[in-house]
Image 1: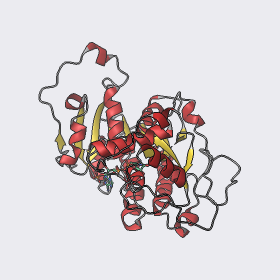
Image 2: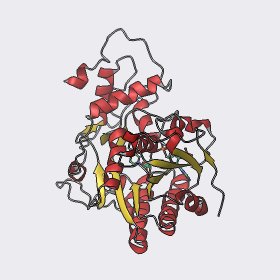
Image 3: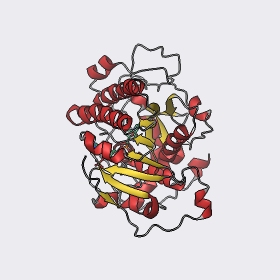
Image 4: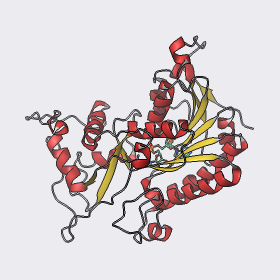
Length: 357
Ligand SMILES: NC(=O)c1ccc[n+]([C@@H]2O[C@H](COP(=O)([O-])OP(=O)(O)OC[C@H]3O[C@@H](n4cnc5c(N)ncnc54)[C@H](OP(=O)(O)O)[C@@H]3O)[C@@H](O)[C@H]2O)c1
């Protein structure tokens, strides 16, 4: 078995204050794969807030790009970063040792089949097998709405729910390799969980926005950023639902902690926005940026987004941050991190008027 390479920020472990001892996660150790990523960083933050001891897997524990994790409240006492790669099963076994649960968030996020397919599918198989080998009873897998709705044969009048599955041939035909790989990965996770007696919970988020904790731009932040930098001259004829990253982290923890939780949980705020609407919101909130005003597709009518239900998470008490707030916080965060230049503005439109209306 390989040595676990670890880094922590603290020296001696300080005594646990009485209040911390009453937190639900106190004395419980869980592992988060791909801890330095956009969603996983918020998940680690939430788990630490709830008193858990967290083992976060990263590919390089000493890389300064993971410093934001070490700066989280509670990290000095209760976060350990361990080296693991999805394609190295032994590293996963070592990382899961002594954990009661695993949150599997690590995955490439790309439509490049060379980069996507193998780590997503084989990596997820390795994670489930390693979890079973280490006697872990509960695994939460970060899937995506992309495993749910990509199916031209489903009844368009019915809202998409947790019983829907994307059609693999359709994903292939349309070169949606991200959706293809995540669908196969999620199906493999269900199969292995059944075979090996692991309790699996799946969260299927739509496109995730909100402030970044990590220092670099991830794919879903880029979805907004490209409309502000001038790199996108037009917008696509497409529609999309969104969810705040804090809600995604919360959903993971809720399904983990609820003993009666079962199956798949679509994680989305209720609104679907056409890209044109997204661009209009951005232009109103941040008029100083060159936001596109024209659709690339001048022939077809605007695509309507799919309808879906987020009832299963609402039944667990979840309330969702409004989509305009998520968009606003994403841009502010990109500015604050120096990832998007702050441009002079003559108007004061980027106050909260639009968010309050
Ligand atoms: N963001 C969204 O809109 C969205 C929506 C639905 C579902 N999801 C799912 O949420 C999860 C996290 O996505 P994210 O947006 O937070 O992406 P992200 O910021 O790119 O994070 C992905 C993480 O996966 C790690 N990773 C990639 N390949 C790996 C490998 N071979 N071995 C170990 N770690 C590996 C990356 O590590 P490095 O830092 O070392 O590269 C990174 O920490 C993914 O499973 C994604 O499919 C995301």
